[in-house]
Image 1 (cartoon, rainbow, N blue to C red):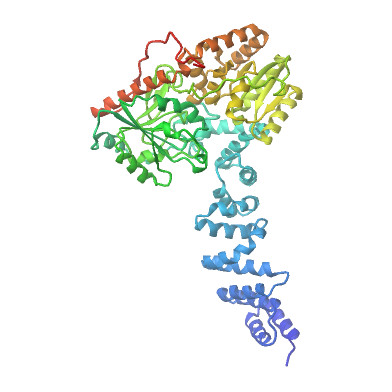
Image 2 (cartoon, one colour):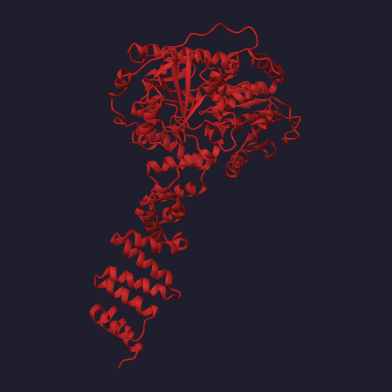
Length: 639
């Protein structure tokens, strides 16, 4: 009788010579006397070689269950076989103990990720994104791309996109994703490396339009003709839908029924800081208002005051078609879509014929591609005549500004001194309070010129992330700006934010994507904001707001004029003082913060839209006439 050691040696020799049947014979004899992990492992490899893969997988599991230093290896081999055979449940049951190991093993990561994603559990496996993105296997890389969250502030996403781009440097979609992520943290080195290439691609290769998202496109490309085509799909909705909506059975009542659709119906969101006063001002004798809300519940846990906004219908858990049906059930005449292509938006609901008139307003500063819309609400600044060919929607232009504002819940208090904000008392303070991703490469380079031309100034920047802070600081100091002249501040409470704005001398607007709510907040605080005329909606917003409060001289015509005006303000503190006085004088008289006046203009717009729809007339460009100017304040503060 041969000893177990001899039988194993014979089996091993036969296996390595390719004599798999002989190896199997020796192993079967051995198993009558010895059942250890080493024997089962060799048996499993032999069964694989003979084509008995399912038997091999079961044998690897037996080897693993006996423990030892290679137990994980045996589980991994069994899982791979079951995955290849399509036995997903068995593979997944073996993969769970291997989650830690898979974070460094792209092959295991690929299998476990594939299995979880089949179950719709993508969030469970994003931990494997780095391993998949660094793999040399293109299949692994493709799966890594599917794991991206689409949120550029996500550190893991940013690192993984960079890894993928290093392996596929000519991939348009990766170039775009990488630049979006690097703009989020103000990585000007990468922007300098890739932005010129992107601009060349944009002018020569229309494939770019198919891989970028409309929202991030607006941050760098101001060509409205191209903005219109980003992500465009000719079959996004049937071409017959607009006419069908216009002619479908609909009962018009004495009141116009307005539906607002958004996920931003919570008090601290920027949209509601602008919009809530309009809701309070709507004339209940002429309009019936319903908010169709898909706001994340976490924002509503401690939210107060929503009951004052009107009827709220929760559609968060409904599909697009089901939501459209709910809107039809409420017999809405005009549906106002308030998110567009911003994060979390569901504009696709409008592609299911939700209302006779469908309108875009406030949330997205551009044309809403692929969505069945009749109108976009704007004004003559953000939507000039020359832009009409570059929009899918017809223009409905309000007479003064497209942006509403709430003057009632915007506190004005002197809470801070410059010392509290680490600002020098004797310096001229330029302030930037927009999201730092809006500080473009051209923008920061112009600010460097400004700081060099104004040696007794400081730049005060609101900054959310440490990465952005480090990158901005590196860019400025590398250009020769002293560290002491750069002061960073973090995001603070709304009341504190409004209170600190007046510590600056002049606010510097960003381009090509302006401040929106941020600009109006600065103007409310009495801070002059310098902007530059733009070439698309997102770059014209501050122009609209500055005109609406009566300080058009703060609108520069180009970069050179922006620099010239900023230097002049620095050199003429009396002019800054006069601008502050004018802002204070105009704040409660001019249209920008006059919510009731704005609401009357908006209601006129709705009546003009409804009048055409009642007559079964197709949408056409509409310009709302202005009410007579106010001669007295619309609000007496402290009364």
